[in-house]
Amino acid sequence: MSNQAVEHVRGVPMVKTFGQTVFSFKKFKGAIDSYKTWVIAYTKQLRLPMMFYTAAINSAFAFLVAAASLDAENETLI
Image 1 (cartoon, rainbow, N blue to C red):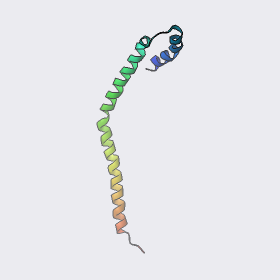
Image 2: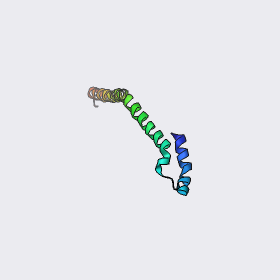
Image 3: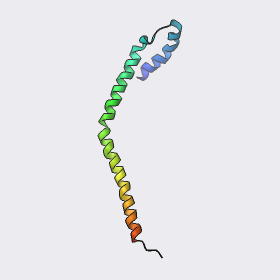
Image 4: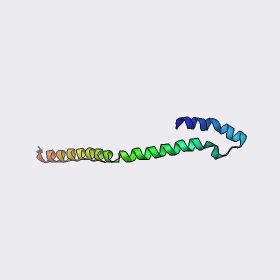
């Protein structure tokens, strides 16, 4: 996709000079569309592992809060 972006940026002066339309950049749009499709598929693939990771991290903090609470109950004030 980055190659098509560079070609697009370099081609902007030519569009202004020769009055070309957006249709001359079909290759760039195709690269963006294929990247979008890849990103969506990749994100959906990682959804379940991310849910487990988030649950594990949050449960660790919940355990720490519960342990601190029990420890505070066992402390005696002088």
